[in-house]
Image (cartoon, rainbow, N blue to C red; front, top):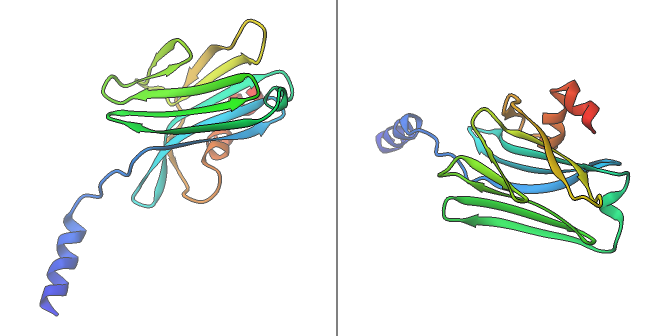
Length: 158
């Protein structure tokens, strides 16, 4: 009995370790797809990065099959999605605290949302803005949609 109490007390005093960042993507409107990266902390979902990829209506449904993948490598987290002939993706470098989107590097100091426009367009996509949104989210529901719902500006973007 004393052993159980000691173990419980030690566990209560031990800081919770941050869980690994996991990324994924969803269609979030007729013109946009999201790439969401986050981790769990004490039962909450924590937003690390949300990229909103916007293009012409249905850009993600043109040109055939879709697919994607992601993972971790050293201090980096990456997620890529393919929609027909359009590829979108992020490569987060934790050590440098930045994300690579296409050929652009975005520092993640006070940034956790990146807005990308003209996806699937002839000239290629480009970053049009960055934002900071309160990162602590409910562990229930879609975290990308929870993040968007916190900002009328992001809702309007979609």
